[in-house]
View 1 (cartoon, rainbow, N blue to C red):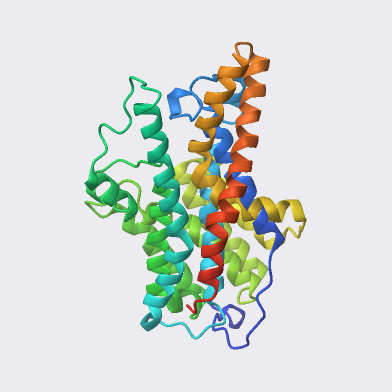
View 2 (spheres, rainbow, N blue to C red; view 1 turned 45 degrees about the vertical axis):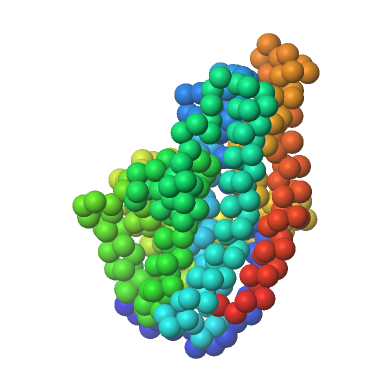
Length: 347
């Protein structure tokens, strides 16, 4: 790896290009998680407990792996956003402000809507299962600061645990960007392994960045190839090593999902308006699908009274379509305005 072709210092500026494959992968990842939650049943905290379907549950049992696809994408996109800037650690506060403005307002509003839904269920529908009874101000604070894993609080919106991982990654990149991406391959490789090793330190919560850091490293290696800072041979060696280590940590299939995502970003060229649209709304879909699915389930069960596997499958499909439509509205009204505002800020 220590050859002249592996020097990473970005001396020549290159124009950032939109990669259509990222849209497809984002959409795939979000839909995978939605299908996993909508078909998982009560056993895995499914969003539609009144619509059990064993065949669909088995068919989409792999859908949780979409989360790791998001991690690999972030490992590529976040340092890519800093590539041709004069970023240094002294500019970490504007950089974090931009990320916070991009991610937090939609997440917070999704949480407000979820709590409002629980209030409606508990106090208007008078369900015996009180959702708000155990919610405390401390729990809400731990959720909006994404510190729940460190304080022992539970998540209100189950997908927030991944946002906590993402924000930990933003902080690490803010501190180590130049070491990771403006040095050489050996430093990138060794530092990636060291970050992976941090997960074994005592007192860390189970869900921490370092446990998943090699997924982000897969995205980082892909960025280095995309920016022509490493050769394809070096890239493939990095992918093989990182994927092998992920097999040890997570098992074969999750590791292969991560490695395949990196390879897709690197080598698959695809662009389609439908994929771009799905990629655009993927974050909103990810944030709101639990709430939207529960709304759709309540209505469809009242109307259809599904009991056969075919009718249950039809109702689940309706819930998915409603969640996508809801996410589009949420994207247009909430996410897009804050995204545009964040784009105007210089990291």
